[in-house]
Image (tube, rainbow over all chains, first blue to last red; front, side, top):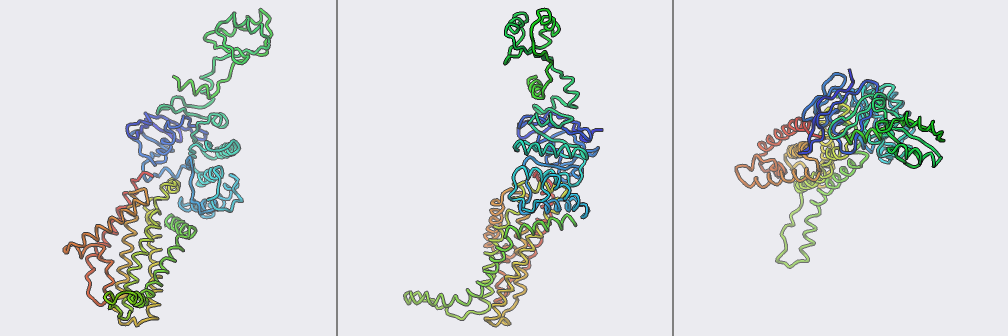
Length: 298
Length: 254
């Protein structure tokens, strides 16, 4: 059973239908990348998982328990980091975590040890200043510490890296990977390189539905690109290949073709027969970006 | 209970670190000192003023001020202090809506009714401390200047006025669960005050309207003043608004 299951989720704002029957399964212990352009309903979906928005129809279950709107009992299983986390600016990080622990009913001693541990892990261990003067990256890190405090089964992060510089982004991703050893991580993003770096599972959200979802390895395999590249530094060889195979496309010194249009073995045979000097012949690895574009264009 | 205590502690910390508690304390203290001072000085001011005027305008006020004047001033000034209080605290809920700080607490399992309880208790606590401190200071000065034993019903008037203040805190709380802007909340409280004040001109309604309680100071003049119906209306409607704000808040989208 998946830790988080969403079936037939629909939501409209006014006459604009944002979600049109969303289906999502987040397996336990995965780092789940929830991918979509801005405004496709990622935040809306997350808010409904947290019971902050009422779905028009559809069901959400967390660890088998149904999510209800308003007073949401399932939230005790979830740690949440909003896209722009706001904390009480007059508190210090340690005070804030103590407050969080108190309202979620944690044992006092556990609050102390756990918050010290977490603040250390997110690099705020020695921070004695009030949150008021914190940078975005610091807030984001405190946000993760806050979300992990209650040892949630599910950590939900809404675009945790979007507003950060490369260093800040790497820090957050590293923390998420570390966190995944004890919890399931669901995070939304539109930065595909972040997903490629850490995710085990993904879902592409487009036009209110999941267009493509599953384990990243499976998706890569099934969408194995049929693209081949030929690199050569000999201009005569280049010209010969192009005249023999009209479907070859030249792009910055590389010849690119798809196996649907041109048989790669025929090309290789041609190269061998004419003893053309080539640097390499390569089958291209599909990037998430090309997948993403393909899925959207369908 | 622990949630409530933690949230109450957070509210109090905020009041202290944002200096709101000190500012309100200073405002109430200022008005407390002003009350006997104004009562004491008013005849002199009027006198000085009339000397400059034509004899025709001379106000034959010059009666000696008494403790009653001081208390009258106190209740008048407390109205002003209450307005300052409401304006300064009107954002106690709405600021958390717009900044998103409440969102994180709620997603941690903070119960919404306890948020209401903690915030109401904070406001009621500050009002109570400021009000009675203010009264204490005013009383002290009044005793120093005049003979207080001649003033009847001071305690009664003071307690009724205190409850009247709590009523406004309940209104503030209730409207905070409905409206997302502090200005809107202030406007609603103002509208309620005005309509109660205006309706008070209808003789049949006069005795049951909440704003009647603001006139409770005439008790100290030794006059009879029927405030019980209005007090009951205030207590019942205040409690009802507090109870009603719980289901309203539970359904609120934050």
